[in-house]
Length: 69
Image (cartoon, rainbow, N blue to C red; front, side, top):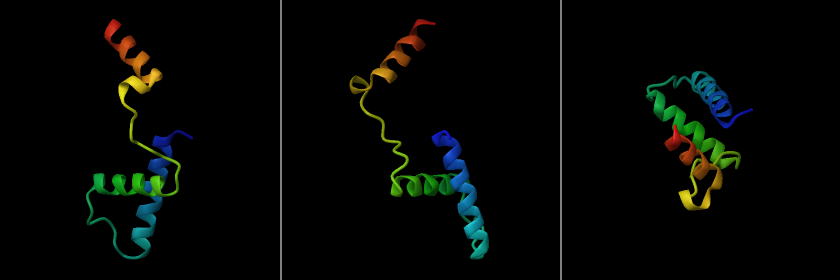
């Protein structure tokens, strides 16, 4: 499962928990998404911190490909 799908699944779980405890979002959507990302980081499955361009060959090749076309 992709990280994005996993985060969306986590968001759904957060919403369920909030409903159960009677705190359904007074929080805006992005805040819930950020909370999902924090939860993923806490369990060590997701790290949105990107390496600098020089250290990431896959990203560098994507950039080259993007500038070509």
